Amino acid sequence: MNSGTLLLLFVLVYFIGLLVISYFTGRNSDNQSFFIGNKKSKWWLVAFGMIGTSLSGVTFISVPGTVGKMTGGEYPFGGFEYYMMVIGFFLGYFIVAGVLLPLYYRMNLTSIYTYLGNRFNVEAHKIGSVFFIVSRAIGATARLYLVVNILQIFLLGQLGVPFWLTSLILLLMILLYTFEGGVKTIVITDTLQTTFMILSLVACIVYILSHLNLSFGEAYTILEHKQYTHLINTDVNSKTYFLKTLLGGMFITIAMTGLDQEMMQKNISVDNLKNSKKNMLTFAFTLLFVNLAFLFLGGLLYLFAMKNGAVYSQVSEVVNGAETIKNVFGFKEAGGQIQNIMGDDLFPAMSLQGHFPMALSVIFIIGLVSALFPSADGALTAVTSSYCVDLLNLNEDKTRTEKQKKSLRMKVHLVFAVLFFILIMIFKAINDKSIVYLIMEVAGYTYGPLLGLFAFGILTKYKIERKYSILAVTILAPVLTYIVNEIVTRYTDYRIGVELIILNGLLTFAGLWLIRKKKTS
Image (cartoon, rainbow, N blue to C red; front, side, top):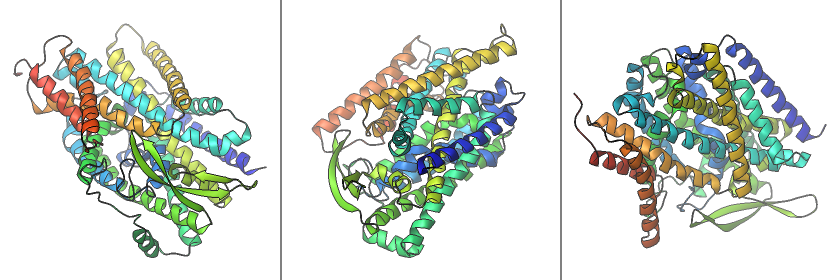
């Protein structure tokens, strides 16, 4: 049995484990089990499982790769610059726990966008849901594409399996174990997946330190000497200027966690507000350490590559219109050709092409698949929940029996699985690795209106009464944000980075302020 077949066998065993969990958690489940787990989820399970959902394949693959990119560069990050955004994430979780969670529990929500309907009108409710569905569908499939492409390049493609079949099989796997239980199942499976992801991270760090005969402190000193630990970018015009990433990270967390049905349906599945806050803050502190470990691993991977005879060079690459410098390593293949490995490919290349021992390759592949599943299973369940609850009003539908509602929900779940497959194939057709970074920027346009809507509802007491006025504002704000971004990029040296979501949210808030009616009683 060759190494590729052996690795696939371990993936199959892992998936069978997920199916077994799904069977036991999905028995006698109903729509409330699927949507919010009957509010019986354990807070510590949710906190641990959310780590896997937040990290995803982008963190697992891309964050270690960013360490070797040019320090102080445009975008993506260089050195440990990404960690300033992580600190921003951390601050954002306190706002989510202190402001948004109490609101959701007080209203006993199944869908968080019900708040917009109660605060404004049905139009706002449905607009919030649509923005979420679009955002999550694009974001989740972009992350899926990244991981599926890695599996295809380094493993399945060499076995003759076409990309479309790889994507289809993985989506069918996710569909199978989320079909019945929904959130009730995902809370458990995400815990398992997070465990394997962190196990892979720790195992790789321990192995590389041992292989290089370095202690933790010695390795950090070497990384510091090579400027791989560079943290603060003081160039105000750069996209990774530290205040931009700090504030941008904070508002990204507020929008992409606190205003995101996928992330919040797990939190509101916890039995009470106190425990849900424990979940959120435990999760926030844990992410500080886990992300730092991924960055440290990134530095170690570059040291490992150089120690093992890699040919080192730097190449320029255009990402989102900006030129960046990437470190490239080359390893001689059997035929004598030099295979170039860019930053994002470094971790999988080390793990799957014979540079790591087989045991570590097995741990890596399970960790990679574990990074893939949480970012897709939760998204598939959440968009199904939002569509059924917010757009079909399934919870309030008195014309259908519980059995009919469940049947409809399953059909919607299947349709979204097909949509996810189509989006992955579109990303493959574009065949541009920078598409992942572009999608992260697109999130600033799609989550910005949600940020502005919720902020206006929470911070003011004004109503919006004119029909379609909220729709006009939430469409116009992203358009204006795009125009401002283009003007700034074209005519100044300043580069708008992750603070794009703040600008979009402010324009949405300003638009709602202009069309406000009168204060509520």
